[in-house]
Amino acid sequence: MAMDIEAAVRDFWAEHQAGRHCPPLWRGRLSMEEAYAVQLAMLDRQVAAGERQAGWKVGLTAAAMRAQQGVFEPCFGYLLESGEVASGHIFAFDDLIAPGFENELCLTVGTALRGPDVGLDEVRAAVTHAAPALEIIEKRGAFAADLPMAMADNAQQKAFVVGKPVRLDDDNGDLARAEVAVYVNDRLAERASGAAVMDAGALLSVQWLANRLASFGRHIEAGARIMSGSFTRQYAIARGDVVRAEFTPFGVVEARFA
Image (tube, rainbow, N blue to C red):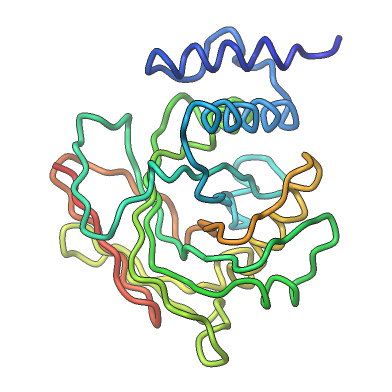
């Protein structure tokens, strides 16, 4: 029996309008492809209601994370301009649902990328800047227990914190060689390399995204920002936390939770 995607979208939209997430009726009923169809329809509804899309996010970029979730590829979600804040932003903790953060490079795509046959050289030529960034996620429902539901609900996306963009050149353009030091309340939590993203760097995230979006009739538009995948595991956020990621050679990004 064919899934009624429009019915799912109506229910997800009603929950969204009421400030809730993940309508219980659809738990365990969506395939990944159906979930993405719901997600993209929700994006269209939000844009029609006055939101502006800023770009896309790529998740599950580490092979170990995909194996843990039992999936064979990364995942994607969308970014809204209303979710973008500058480094140093103070979030109201009570406004967040079981929040966490990931440390990523936010890439700027200067020219459109249209799949399904985008190659890495095309991506390398299209991506113009990288900025230190944090993705703020919300654990709205059981991510691991119902991954399609999480994708329909935009892959846990809440906000993204972005530092100063740095133009890519021959000296810094190999993103696999980038490094990050993650601090929580001024204590070093972890160090990692950009090679942890897609096993070879964040440009492969953009390549995968461009080709995956093509299966839904979408593409990466010129000017889009791409949150390209975390260098480390996801970290939970507690009230009062100050989180900071220092990216070599791209700079520092910080957020506070009061």
